[in-house]
Image 1: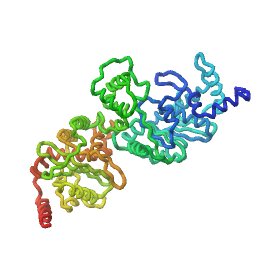
Image 2: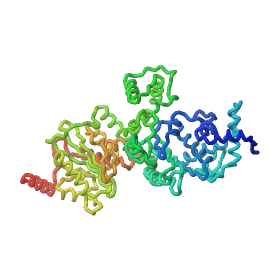
Image 3: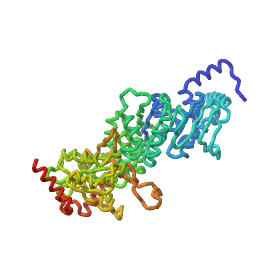
Image 4: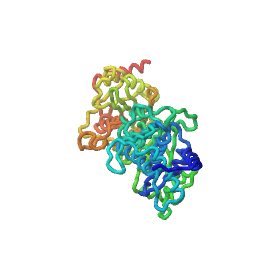
Length: 553
């Protein structure tokens, strides 16, 4: 039965309903993280996003800020008060997207809810909620309806508005797109991440809104990383409707993240860390906040900086617990052997180590022994979809900087042909380079162990932390690739055996693994260029001819 209102009551309600911020802070009920039913009111992070949102928004966040809840209610509010409004929710799993649809349905169903011992305000808001439900009636849902928390993949409103749950939204035109956990999708399903960016994003009209919110995974590569970097580059510049605005919400701004009842001692190292964050951010970090962070770190481990970052750089840290070379890279970092500045020795040989691809990624390392048991890692170059001539040009450019590459250490498939149907080995030798072929390993994990042993003796130049650019595309840096080299998800290889994931990180990792195997087999030495490797007659002749040509200049 519809409520009858006086003219003055209608005006008061109309004025209230014309204010979107008041609607969001008053009308809708949620179940909070403690399982309690409460009226939604925006917290500091939600209000910051709401008050300064752009048409394109990228949110790098910590856990449990309620950003996805805010966007779900924003979608509901927009659907109710904007005819023919179309929204979509894309999440890492279909069930996760449906769970956000369920939040929308729950908030609508409870528009006229009266809590126990209601206040006068509760009574008035329930009346307004009843008016809205009388206008829209029962929502039309599609999907499997199992209980009150229905597993719906779409909700349609009587004013022509709708919201759909998906793992990728392509086709049609949307007024609001919510993409949740793009960081996770970028690492675990990079093809779908690309589909979201090229398909889902392009379904949103330029003057409408996209909210991409996520913690970050995977280090410095992938669709989410590229999106974060491009949005951070926009900071301080005028934004077009198609430019993403960057939002970062660190853990220390959340008032709930404190542990005042704890008095555990805080180490000088931890206090120095908190003090540095406090100084750079200008936000005080209280003893209770420090206690909370230390307590959470006990369970989160190295994922603490991913799940609860203090700075964007922490969230983008490429060295993650559980990756294949995590321990070795962390040890190199602690020694100061990761991304440092030094000059190569002009009197010692420089090797290159290769991972080869046809229409795929190719990665090259430049490596020099120091004569004292260490390996100087001078540079890394990674690109894709290029002929061998391109990489020979890169090789010659490095020759001009240092000295000519003494030996190209290549994997077992070096005789493969490139996109111009010339074998890599023939092309390199025709260019005057010596080539050694490292046999395919019969035990991948033994080969990886060789690489771990090699890493223990490495010193990486800061160039190895820089991304390379080819045809205006930026590629992952060598150090970031090693830091992101990880196991594939269980079952992805069709068996139970643990296998590394073949992704953007694997190419530089495989190139260094080829070199580690060559060292183990004695193909390259730590002092002389060919101390353990005998050249073939043709290789020797080419090298002598090249040296003679140099001497005759």
